[in-house]
Every structure is written in structure tokens, then in C-alpha cells.
Length: 333
Image (tube, rainbow, N blue to C red; front, side, top):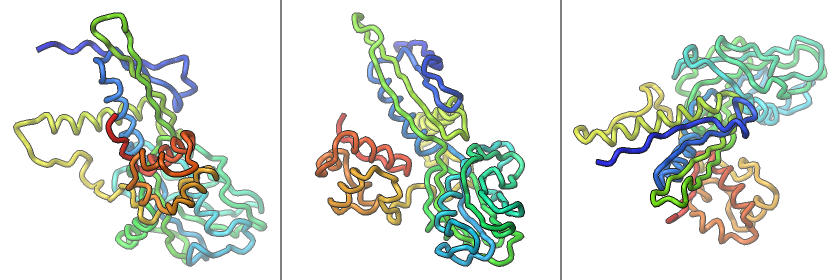
């Protein structure tokens, strides 16, 4: 049996911006493997890397998400959207899977702006976007918030989190006496953007070898090198089971206890949530596509056939959908 060539992977220092935005090169690869590996790693990076995200919020005096708060400029929906965008780096040795952690905020200072940095955090957690504006108050002591977070993968919408809150409500502790637990969408993916390219190394040789280059941008909660390493381990864990021909049994890949349904629950997600450009949004709306679930049923060719969608708009929609763990069928490549 012919031996595989020795593969090297390195960081492309010329494209490195920081630990969270950089490029990696894997070479030499046999012909066809660059695209195979690049596609697999990219999809795992976008869908299966673990992180911490809010799933429930309790605000003093707030009984439902459509209220306004006295002497607070923003209404509750605006505050919830900003709380959902808090990005949390965490120590996996301290944060346990299946456990719930709390971020607390009390505006006992002078009136003015309140930021993510004003939250009191559990041990092992760090907010990487501390300058995120949460709310603006017209008086002191008018805003008290508890944000409940957990570790997970993928995307979980607020409807699914609402069911989860009902199941574990007795385990939630809060010093806020008057107020209800409000579910929010959880986007656990710590990856902002992933792209890859493949090129031939020795076009003049009989044996064609390839180079794979992957550019990774994270949200600042995980290093790019740790993210790609985690993706590779997930792929290897799956492939090891498939390679074990002596045991054709179904096995769980991820750790026991992390059994929440964290795949996209797209039936409740409107296309407004994709934060598309006006051109892309209007084209989809005119074609009577209003939910992510409807888009999930399309192939890439179907998307290309929608009137007024150019290549730039199509790439934008595909990229936004992948953040919700939705991958369109690209057909035969």
C-alpha cells in the first residue's frame, strides 16, 4: 500500500492580524484533498465549536419582553438584543457542560450609559466586547439585570430556550424578586468568518499536489488556532468510529450531558434575523421567502434563480445562513 506524504501545517504570518484573525496553510496534499478537507473543516467550524452564550434574562420589574422601563432610554426588546450580543470567553476547565452561570448588573451609579463591562462575572469568564452599550438611564438605581449563560454549540432560538427555562427554572437563582425569566436566542458559535482556497503546488510534475489555505476570524472568545484544532478533533472523533469496522454501532460523539437540541430551529426565525442588506432582503421578500426554514429547503441553484439576486447577494445570504447552521445543497461540484 502506498504511503501518504508527510503533511505540514503552519500559520501564514503575512496574513495574521492577531490571535483571532489569521490564516493557516496545510500542504502538501494529494489532489482533491484540499477541497475535501477545507469544506469539512469549514462546516465544523461554523456549526460545532463550543462557546458560552446567554439563554435567559431577568430584569427587575419586567414581566414580559414588550415592556418599557421607567427612566431607561431603551425598551426591553432593544436591551435583550444587546444582551444577546455579549461575547464571553471562558475557561473550559472551570465552566462545566450542563451548568448554568449568571452575569449580574445593578446600575447603582450616576445616570448615564451602562456597558457590558459593568456586569459582575462568574470566575473563569471574561467579556471580550466590554464597550457594548446595554442601556442609557436617566437616574441611578433604575436597572437591575441577571443574564443566565451556558456552554453549547450551534444556534438555539428563544422558543427552544423558553422550553429549557421551564424545565430548569427551579435551578435558576436570582436576587431580583419582581420580574420574569425571558428567553433569548443563543448563538453559541464563536466563529465570525471562515474561508478556504486550494491551489496546485507542482503543476509541472506528473504527481499533482495541493495546498489548502484557511482564513479564520473568530469573535474574540477563542483563538483561531484552538478553533481549528477543536474542529479537527471533532472530525477525527467521527472518522475513528466510521473506521472501526469491528463495531458498527451508533455511538455518541459529544460528551454525555450535552444533549440539548442545539441545531437550528428555523421554523421560528424570520429572514429579518439574518441582518441582510436591503437589496438581498427585498429580493427574498418579493419572492415570498419570509423564514429561514423556507430558505433551508432551497438549493444553491434555487437561490441563484431568485430575481434580482446577484452573486454578491447570494454569497451574503449563504454566509448568513451558515451562522445559523443552515447549509444549502450545492449539488454536484
